[in-house]
Length: 122
Length: 122
Image 1 (cartoon, each protein chain N blue to C red):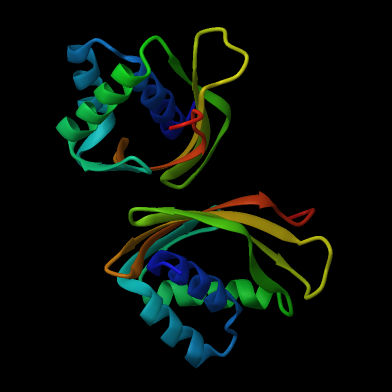
Image 2: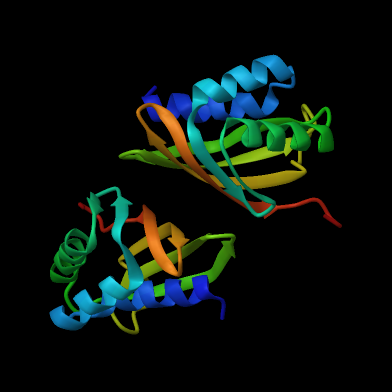
């Protein structure tokens, strides 16, 4: 697995890490200190703000699991991939998203997130 | 049309601008001076390098036209969209690509390009 693919897998893992101490540690390892994260719901910068945003999403979608869907398409310092969020074992995901990430020195520098499926009424 | 949608349309236009002087002028208006452009074939920085890369692609695909396909999905300072390259009026494009762009102060700061269809043998 290339560095960038390993980063993407650890990125998905961090969204499932609900232990606050472990999640914060994972984010500090995974992202550059002043990394940016932008999706339709948030534009935040830095370890603490990214951690708080992920913690909020975990609260909102308690018990659901993030997973990679399809393959990672990577080149140079960037990659694109689709992910989904759903109940463990569920046939249909509740949310489908798509991210492009930019890396630098083996860490995430910027995440650009987009949504392909959102819950009805959201 | 939002600023970012207008930028995306001018971005596609710049790929079709084969007059060297006009293309270079368009690129200076469209991109921040130290903007980055990364796709599977190139990772370049700055007006001149971006211009040279586009000029090379125009040489390689002479007579073909770049066009936006589908809608632009934009939020905050970023957008994603799919484009195609083909002969004018052709049913099937030769190349299909997908870009995420990041903007800053009304100009492109970074383009992340990916390819969904490439010519056979390329």
